[in-house]
Length: 442
Image 1 (cartoon, rainbow, N blue to C red):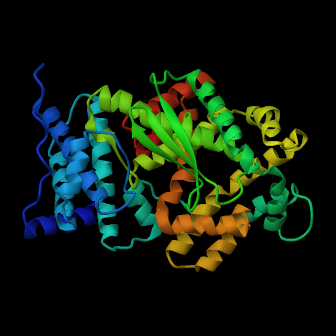
Image 2 (image 1 turned 60 degrees about the horizontal axis):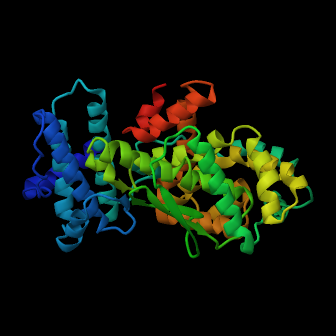
Image 3 (image 1 turned 60 degrees about the vertical axis):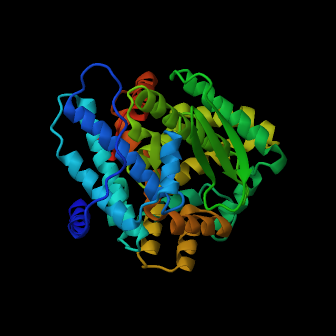
C-alpha cells in the first residue's frame, strides 16, 4: 500500500514543489537536544497541522484535538487544497525516513507511530478524492491490519448452539428479538442506569490506574446517528459521551458503554496519552487523533477488551443482576438467561466484518446486507439497517471492534495470568505509542 501511494505522491511533488507545514516553534532554552530528536519534534508539529488541515477537507476526520488553539484556527483561516496536502504528507514521510536510528526504544516507537499515521493519512487522502480500495486493502492502508475474513457458513454452528438457548418457533433472529424485548431499559430510567454503570466502571478502573485529578465527562442522549455510543474527547481530561436512543437500549448496554466509552476505554485512553505523552514528554502528535488511522484499532480494541477486564468471569452477571436490573425495573431472576445469550452471541462478531466486506466490495446489495446482519448478528430489522448505515459511513472501520479486541486480548493476556499484570499491561498499552503490529509481539 505505502509504495504505491508514496510513488503517486512523489509524482505530485515532481509536478510542483511541496508545501511544507508552518515552521515549528523555536525550542525553549535548556539542555542540548540531538538534531535528530529536534527534527522529529518539528515533524510531529507539522504532522499535527497537516492532520488539522486534512480535517477541514472531511468532517469527522479529526476525532479529537487539544493542542494549541491557534493551530486549529490556522487550519480554518488558511486552508490547503488537496494537492498541497498530498505533497505535505509525502514530504513528511521522506523527512521521517531520513532520520538516523536512535538508541532510545521510545524514540524509535515514536517514529514508527508517526510513519504509520502518515501512511493512513495518504490512504485517506486518496479516498477523500474518490479512490475506492477493496475492503481488505483499505483496512490495511488505514488501520495497519489486513483482516482475515471467515466465510459466513462457518458461523452456522454458532447459530445452532444459540438456537437451543432461545425458546419458541420461527426464525432465530425473530425469536432472539422477541426474547430480548424483556430486557429493554425504560427511557425514564436510562440516565440512572447509565450513571450507575459508568460510576462502577470508574471505581474498578481506579483500583489499578492513577487517573488525572479533575478528570470527568458529560453524558448526552442523542438521536439520528449510525452508531450507538460515541466519546468526543475534549482535552484537559474531559470527555463528552453521547448515547444514541434511536433504538431500544438493552440492559447489557450500560456496562458495555460505561467501560468502552469511559473507564477503562476511550476516556481513559485519551487522558493517559494527554498526560503521559502530550504533556509529559511534549509529543505534540498525540494532541490530535485522526479517526482513520492505526490508532483506532488500539482505541476500539482496548475499549472492548476493557469490558471483560473490568468485569471478569461472572462478575458482570452478578453486578447487572444485583444492581442494574432493579434500577431498570427488570426481573433479576432472568438475568442469567440473558447473559448466557449475550456470551453466545460474541462468537458471531467475525460475521459482521465479512458482511461489511461483501457489501462494500459490491458482492451483495444493501437489502442482502441487512438480511445477513439480521441472521448472523441476531438483531432486529431496524438494528440491522443501522449497522449497514454504519458500514456505509465508516466503511472498513468495523474491523477495529472485533479484530481489535482479539489482538488486544491476546497481547495483554500473554503478559501474565494475574489480573494485576493484565491491568499493568493495559495501562502500558494506553500510555505508549503502540501500533497494531506491536500487538503481535508477545
